[in-house]
Length: 339
Image 1 (cartoon, rainbow, N blue to C red):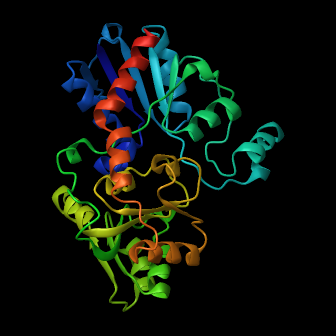
Image 2: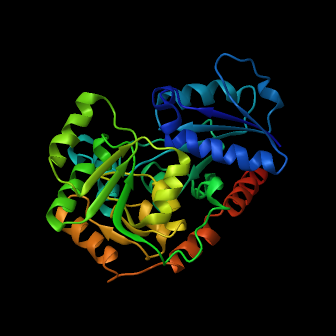
Image 3: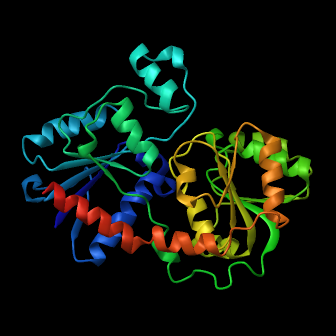
């Protein structure tokens, strides 16, 4: 197949740290390894849109994909869209009564609350049952128009899965993210580490000096909290192999692939109790209220102390269910059905 991938415009701000870009790049890599041609569309190049079997858009739902799909549909109607929907708290007072009732009944938290049926898009993609239900039950999309394809773990990890993942772990909790993004809830992790006296290692983008000052102030002089900042892929793998626990108690999150990768590499997982991310662990992760510091802290301590243990069974489950090979086959099947 000849396929074009188009990213939403704002992706240029966050560059490589953007999860949506990462998803598209991973799928493109896996498709190319199976002999398919995938163009990552660049606004400065020229394209023969009629030549593509599939044109796949990725990004947060908004006016951009309406404009692009409407104009493309006259040239090539085989348009797909991955409308990345990260659950987050919303104000029910700010949405219509019809949608409000549906959200109250089925979806406790969501962003991008709007009725939208995507008239110029042939197929939409959901990464979780939660996203599938949201698209069909809240946005009113025909369920036959939605394909569920989960994210795979990072392909580069396939040959690096730690042997004896339950052994040789160090007593610390790891967290990797854009550390100063409020939705990642790093402040609550810091408070939990202080209150329950466990070692916390924070890695990832530290933002601007002004943004990081908030975290720095929260950490104070606590020696049990270490901030590494941005790290290489090699260092990330090293940490995955060492850490006893990986925690991702986000206020809102679509999947959180860093936690999936950490689970594959042998970490015990503590993840946010919002729709979507917890689906990836089949009940083998500790699920916590992101607004409750005590719940976060106690769950991490239980995992650190071996009160709850899910490895190596969790690693084996992730390796089987979310392998790049399995996921790309689901993706190809969905494209072929569309054609």
